Length: 502
Image (tube, rainbow, N blue to C red; front, side, top):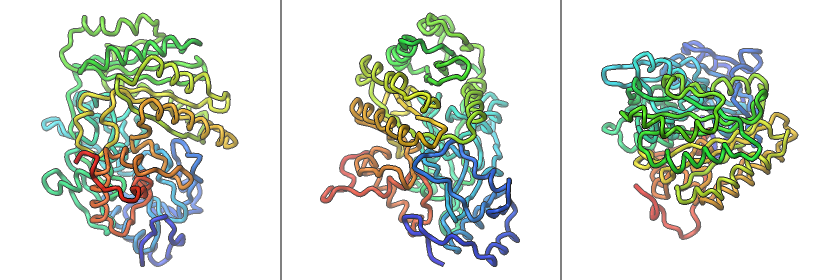
């Protein structure tokens, strides 16, 4: 019956006969608009982008297995309906928002299967990161995953950065096999050996190519790690904040056995606080670790679990705060920006400017839900061959500007632009991680240069386009953060693929 157009405009009415036939074959749940709480619950997202309006799908499909996903893709394609896929609901720009189309809610496909002998994990496409952490912990293993346990597996197919990544690589670098449903309803299993081009593209641009139903990932022994977190108040002069960032730059970044980050957030009871996750991997003597940590402990943390936490507990560091924020503000708005830089660019002067624009300059109370995050890159991240855009950096600076009153949209978006301008001026690289890209219709368009930055260069972008053309020639999959990347066109006369790594 045709295909969705590239701008997502297509039919918005389901055919009763086709839907009835789908119900007969579908093992999962079929939920139509108007079915009350069950329908509304499926629309949950972590935060709403100010560039998007809440999409109301004509039908929500909750598959129980790959055959259900095949049926959903075929139904949407044959009905000329736009299809969006929802995992954890954390995607910037709300790629799961679809108005009048089909929402494929993967929340019933959360099985995790651990092979402790091969140290590999098979996770279904609807898994949240916390599901995998819980199952691998039973065997003393862990997979390099993000720091928010409720994030979905979209993280893996678009890159995936972890506290372990400097030591063990990105999530996508540890992906061994992907099973996915393509636009024509066929099921493929991609590995480095069976389909090297698709496998390469899936590990960074996977959300634009199909629906991942299973993924096999390498895991690592974490029984001997030295891990935990520290919490400090953020003093008015931000002396603690500056000291933590200097420690990350001057001490942690030069070591291959450390993973570390720092989150700055406004706690409703404690006021502004700084929280760091810290991980030591390897056989570094405890006495040496204690000496490395001394500058942080000299700052007087109000809570310190480093050396007394399991890796699983480390991964859950931010979860209580996330749950408290969501409980207090079930609906709130976020706009993201971030940038990576090399050590030489991460000067004290930049730290001062970054801290000022993300703390003192915040219009309060309007933007009180804002969070600042700084992570360490480098190490194995620089060795990635996946189409991701931040492999050159040593440190990553991310600010999630947040608010709960829709009247603050202009204030929030204006402040995000101020932070974006600072990062661009200081490093030249902003929002190079594809998961920071707002795919909303009202979001800013990308230049070709910006699009290339998100995938590691022009050659990688054109290589992804070739894979997309082969496996989704009619551009059926449009609800994903790669949409503005693929929409970017080179300046007239510019040759493709001349300035990037293959």
